[in-house]
Image (cartoon, rainbow, N blue to C red; front, side, top):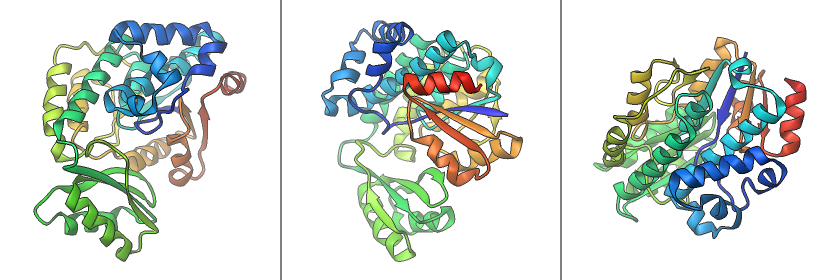
Amino acid sequence: MRAFIFPGQGSQAVGMGSALAEASAVARETFEEVDEALGQNLSQLMREGPEDELTLTENAQPAIMANAIATLRVLEKEGGITLADTADFVAGHSLGEYTALCAAGGFDLATTVRLLKRRGQAMQAAVPVGEGAMAVFLGLDFDPAQEVAEAAAQGEVCVIANDNAPGQIVISGHKGAVDRACEMAKEKGARRAMPLAVSAPFHCPLMKPAADAMEEALSDVEIHPLSAMLYANVTASAVGEHEAIRGLLVEQVTAMVRWRESIAAMAEEGVSEFIEFGGKVVAPMVKRIALDADQKSVVSMDDIEALAKAL
């Protein structure tokens, strides 16, 4: 069995998609479709920067999605490989869940990019700059990281935001609590505990205003039948029912991304191959979770051509 997986925020970079667009009319058309849906020249920002503008949450989220979908569309339209015939499951890390839904036909591209633009704006606006923070613990597993977060809270918010892989945990919450947690994590044995360069504390209760905004944004959006079941961030289990997906996307804004559990559950289900589109971020995590599974990242035209031959 096979899963197509999609990266989340942090995988953006100036120049993303440029080589693919030069090599493929399909990629160029995808980026043009995104620009038209947004009424914004996002593709130029992706190609040329500036980096600080691309890194803004409201730009990074749709850009990462657009790059991944362009990569997948080139495989499908030029390589003759369809997701429906090739993938048993899809999954995405945080915003990548929207990419996964677009890839599997749940949302059309224009709807997806507009939802992610709204999501990015809402997440950025939910907490005043400087009040929240995120940090990554390396070399500390889930249970001790949970203990650290609870001890550091001291009446503030401090929770695990991303359970990425064994020994890689991201926490989120009030800045003071996150700073305390970093010190405690080192005492607990973390190899590194360092703040992340993010503009808001994602995937924690402080994001409730953003969750409310997404509930409104998603309320009248049609979710089409999926060509492959989605492994949801919130539950780490497969879902295909439309209304359940709508609720999970709202809950996802404040809930932990259960990536380690999702990959482990897919491997337990029989998935032996994980293919990441548009980045080299989440596939490497698979190496540390599903040790016997094959994983690859597809970014370039060479990657696409090699994958088309292999499938």
